[in-house]
Amino acid sequence: MSGHSKWSSIKHKKGAADAKRGKIFTKLIKEITIAARVGGGDAAGNPRLRTAIQAAKSENMPKENIERAIKKGTGELEGVNYEESFYEGYGPGGAAVFVESLTDNRNRTVADIRHIFSKNGGSLGENGCVSWMFSKKGYLNIDKQAVNEDTLMEIAIDAGAEDVREDDGNYEILTAPEDFESVKKAIDGASIPYLEASITMYPATTTNLSGSEAEQMVRLMESLEDCDDVQKVYTNADIPSEILEKM
Image 1 (cartoon, rainbow, N blue to C red):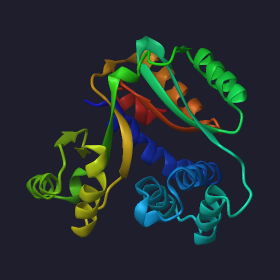
Image 2: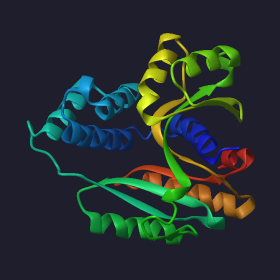
Image 3: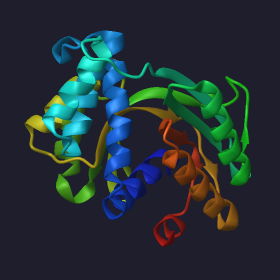
């Protein structure tokens, strides 16, 4: 069972309860800004920006906030100069952790992330220590009750998906990054709702955790995601559903 899918599913449920709207908006604005800076402000020709805008709309971000973030990225408005950085390490039980960050101060960010790892039973490693365990994939997570499996399989595969898997009450669709948008468009066209749709780092193998190690791993992931400079966190940890649900 995939650590990624289970973590994504529980984040979706917890996020609805936590409603950390301001922090979510901050991370989305950073992503829109840097996407516009790297690939231009025209969403039609910038897939990364298009995906970021869709994510912002799904969180009901006001249109003017999105437009302002794009203009800051293209230089039409003055804004903070964010840099992308990546961090790798190990959590409890040796589980792999990969962190994506957007920051205006790398020294502050690496110090904060190192502290979070050590406080929660993990350790920050060297670049490359765990990234080889992950592959960049397009990823959609769909509630099993939302669609018939055969129907979903036909739509997704015809649109270019690599695989459709059943996992813990949900269906996972995996695509090559370049095929993500065409598959998502096909799912949208069929009016099939999804819990998550994103370009992600997907683990090739998982590390099974249980008991106190699993609980500590959840705390590590939540602490990293709560860090203002962290955009996304990925793990290959396979955490039992009963532990995720009680925390």
